[in-house]
Amino acid sequence: MTNKYRIYKFTSYSIKVQAVNNVGIGNSSDPVLAKIQTTQADDKSPNAGLTAGAVIGAILFVILLFFALFILRRKFLKRQRSESVREFEIWHSKNRMEEPKGQVAKSQPNATAQTGRLNLI
Image (cartoon, rainbow, N blue to C red):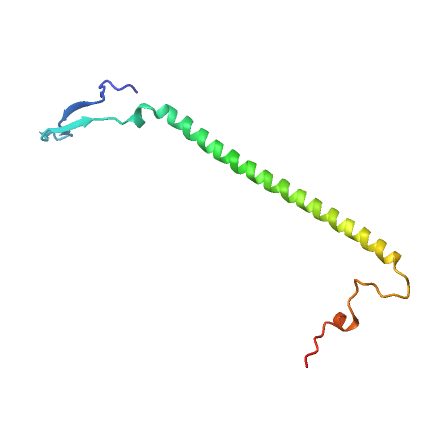
């Protein structure tokens, strides 16, 4: 539907309202003065959507990047921890094999500490 009345920016209009129904035509209202104004946001509205989309997209990209780095760091630390445990187990098994049979290993705590009791006097 085309509008045959054009409204222009920065223009003043005088508006009257008059009711019409099956009884007839009513009295018109007092004129009301209306000023049409615009802001800069109205002038740039086609670019506002593009700008908002770009900003939201950039924020989501940064969040996704941080999430990916967090996941990769967790995997790296987990792999590093498992390699460290594996190296310790290899080292520990070599040291146990090298101990003479009659000696107690230095890494083993004494018998009272193994029971988990604490004797207080």
